[in-house]
Amino acid sequence: MKSDSLRKCIGGILLVSLILIGFLEPVQQWVKTPTFIRMMEGDQVALPISAPAAASEGTVQLSSNNEQLSVGGSRVGKDEVVFEIAGLPIKEVNVEVLKDFKVIPGGQSIGVKLNTVGVLVVGHHLVNTEEGKVSPGEKAGIQVGDMITEINGTKIEELSDVAPFVQSAGKDQESLKLVVKREKKTIKTTLLPVREKGDAAYKLGLYIRDSAAGIGTMTFYDPQSKKYGALGHVISDMDTKKPIVVADGEIVHSEVTSIQKGSDGKPGEKLARFSSDHKVIGDITRNSPFGIFGRLNQTIENERMDKPMPIALSHQVKEGPAQILTVVDGKEVEMYDIEIMSTIPQKYPATKGMVLKVTDPKLLKKTGGIVQGMSGSPIIQDGKVVGAVTHVFVNDPTSGYGVHIEWMLSEAGIDIYKKDHSRAS
Image 1 (cartoon, rainbow, N blue to C red):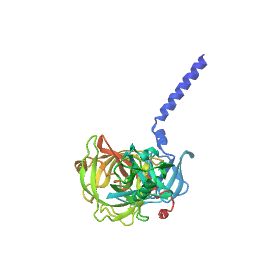
Image 2 (cartoon, rainbow, N blue to C red):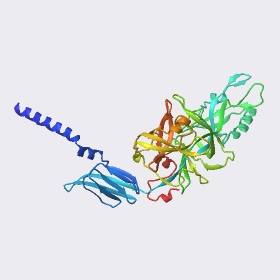
Image 3 (cartoon, rainbow, N blue to C red):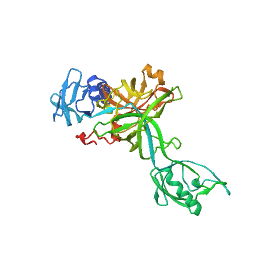
């Protein structure tokens, strides 16, 4: 019995000791030290550990003081930093150094024109025929958000392509053969147009359209490839609330005419118009959860920061002061102060990586905070482009979400992880 009690006593002491050891500062340093670091060429990363360390490949340079170790990316490649105590390896940190990559920040107000794949169904309507009210489209099983891509084997690209088929089928009383895209599915159906009472024209019983337009903010462009990213979020159809599948599109300059100030429970909005020259400054090839992307056909300037700036990876962004570039009057890009309230180091792409708060008195007075149309405004911190404004909090217009620039670059087709970034175009 005494031996059992002794074992339990010793076990308890060991358990308490292990728990207490976990709270010791040196142990906390080991726990906080990551096992993998990705950094840009020329960057410095501080590790909360002061033990002797060595790098095996010479890709990184190490310098230490009594409190931390500084790891500097001296050249592109991979390396291993090994920490030792009494000559024994204790911890290994794998380091990947990426080639220094720079973009030109935006902030300009842009007009966006999107053309859909086929024609988009945005609603049903009842046609008042001699036999009563009916919607042939609804009867054919076509849903709001569907895209009609083919009629009778012919590819449909715009609204004007549809009418001749409808009138011809109505007169001949022959059903149309439709190919419809519904998210990732392709559906085939038939539809017989009907004629409204007192009208010679035949109708589908559907509301359809082939394009959409709006405004937003340019985030960045690559000065070499001219690839750009804007908005920071997907463009959805105002009626169907579903993302628009883009066939093509274009962006033009726009100018802000007025601001509807935001308040609690009611987000504000930039009111803007396309520039009078309607000059196309770039195309749109992708509409994704991270924004719109394409290629510029000319250089654009914000007259604030028109030189290439380095970018920050998601884990390099920190809580604290930052700035945004945006337009609130006319075409003039201005810089405003914000605070990054929280940021999440992300290993995989995600649209909501930061929480932001507008702190600039001038911007708060003008807009109340973040307003619609400000999406895409680039976020600058410590001389680096770190992300873009994406959404406003409905119940607090001074705050909203941001997306990390790392994921927008990827969506633009710019692979910053390659060793040779001159091939990014």
